[in-house]
Image (cartoon, one colour):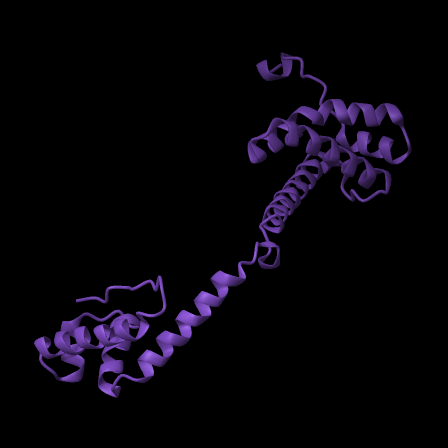
Length: 198
């Protein structure tokens, strides 16, 4: 007799019989399922969630979902009960994480819930209108230079190369345009200014 044959083998758990017994309403089989899978499922939950309380709650939910599925005969291959439990755990953990993310996003304050400062909003509107008016009063070329600097982020040298004008001329025209806008906006208090790229 081979050495391997002389070693007594441990009785293997019969997941197929366990699933069948649960389907037939055997309460002892349900308790056996919980005893067999509670710790492995808990460890999976803990590894994913990093929170013992959430892992404990979700473990109970997963085992209940497995029980309901087995009672309803949803496990087509009873010998694959461990894989079925693992798949159920994976799905419910993923759902839990998605729900938690959505809940966190929904707790962000809505725009309507934020305090509305009518005076501050009026000042913002006033500044935007004043800036728009000041830009309209610039010459087309000066406005183009500011747009290339502020919107496209080009430096004076890059603007000069694009427009075929000297670097010094661009710097002078940009400085003059900014000064004109500042003078127009002077009556409007606390206007934030952004220094364009040189």
